[in-house]
Image 1 (cartoon, rainbow, N blue to C red):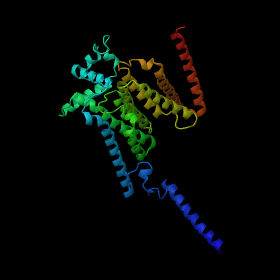
Image 2: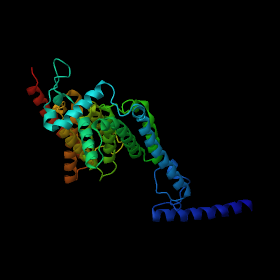
Image 3: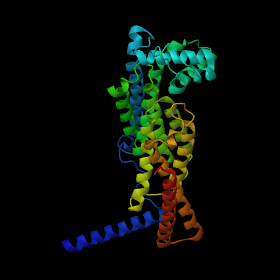
Image 4: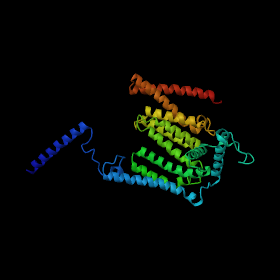
Length: 372
């Protein structure tokens, strides 16, 4: 009797499970998929708050984010609060002097300025040896504030800039974290860390008017826009913003080479892993995003006086150039594959033919150009 009752119950359960499975196949989702299992905002991907717990969790995270930005600003304002808007250290004073010259004499004279009072008695051609991004940014902010009826001194703008950019770098790192991990909680935590991490504070303290103060923001912005450009097949237009952020990074600091190579390595590894069957590999999205980034970013970089044509001559920058050329070749092969509806084996044979011809042509050119 017991066994027959258990079998009857199992039969009812199995029929019920079959009905649930059929319903799931028809609707494309589980029957309970719309019911949140606890405060998913705190422990999962960001969702629209749909209950008191989610709304409370969202409010807590927003409060932590605001507190992080406030902390990032207040910590960096310590020197200004104690001693006033004073620029300190040697490099910040030289940078301020260059900014003052740009504000007083304009763009043309700045880039043709030979400073006889620096590195005396030799002097220095400042216009062609300085990364001018910080000076241009400071003058633009100063003129914008005065145009809005807020009469700021140029010295004060330069002293406060590291604090402002310290907060913006914190926010961009949060955006990058969210884009990579998909969690608002993780983004808020990363902002909290970036706001108080000593390595960032020491390069963005109030009055420390140096290149790294704005360069960290440019680095985080470039990486964020690059990752954002790869989110889906329609997001490759963010490659334009990636290129603009990178060009700004080049104008701000000589460490732009690290940013360029990191993005180049990421694109190359994405393609390489695709050949191994891991991830998407080469896609039109990747080709378009990297092409926009490289063309716009390099166009901006070659107009920065200390950089010039080094993106095409410097050994440490030739790797990303090679990635750019390689993506053009792969996209050309992919276009032919789609046009002629080639199968996998035919596509592989086409790749071998095209790459062999290009390697042969490149070898001949190198043999001609290189000295014996």
